[in-house]
Amino acid sequence: MAPHISIVCPMHNEAACAEEFVRRTDAALRAMGHTHEIVVVSDGSTDQTEAILERLVQSAPTLRCIFLARNVGQCGALLAGLQESTGEVVVIMDGDLQHPPEEIHLLISAMGDGFDLVSGSRRDRVESLLFRRFPSFIANALLRWVSRCEVRDMGGFKAVRGDLARSLRLRSGQHRLLPALVALRGGRVGEVFVTAPPRFAGTSHYGITRTLDVLFDIVLLWFEGSFRSRPIYLFGRVAFALLAVDCVLMPFLLWDKFFVGIDLGTRPPFLLAIMFFLSALLLLASGLTLELLSDALNGITDRKPFVIRSKVGFDRS
Image 1 (cartoon, rainbow, N blue to C red):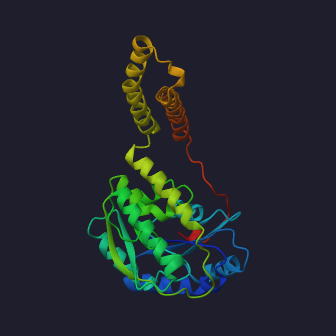
Image 2: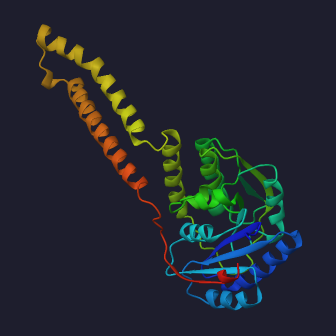
Image 3: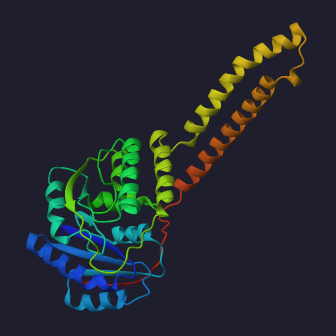
């Protein structure tokens, strides 16, 4: 029988946090009284994380562990955990205990209001203002504008309807965009406020360099949301605008050529019109090519960005 709640937690070199995470999470879920499972994905950890998890499986009957063959990044590890989860509700959280297990009940309670996803919006963050909080504020503002999803904090602590979570096909980096992605699919998204304590132990795996990656993710999300994943809509509109400018310029230039006798080759507007025309043709060709590539990509099924080396604890589920 499927549990009511699945916890999905990617970990990479979290040996200092793993045991405390499992202990507190299991205790919090038992206090709630729901059947549950804890799915921890080791994302190619090279420290003692996997050894600790294998030991914990012996004493924690609700713990399931997935060990990936190599480090594929948080999004790939999260996807592996989502696809192996079985709960009616999936809770996504980090293993460093900056998402307090004692606040899982806030997300689960809000899910009872009919939401497809509930986001935990962090308050009183203690991270660096310049390198963490300010970039996060800008990224969240851009995501709200692009997706029309009013969630204040897109990344991190989330509860998602189980069947929806398992249907997601996330690409690298998209774990930061879950509320926006669900909203663009027509899902109902809510949020609750949660706390954001410091890491229990260890150091963060994130740096300021990820800000540029987030910006690219937002641009792609805008592209997909605005043009319904149809490249020809975007490229075709830009090409049409350039051709419209050509249709205005060329009659005047041709009039001057044949009735006034002005040589076209010496006129900058003529060169501009030629450039616009060639650009329009290039954009149309690009749009059509991307349409064919997009259609081919959609035809590829079950392509996963990870290889599971082993699984522990699933035979008891």
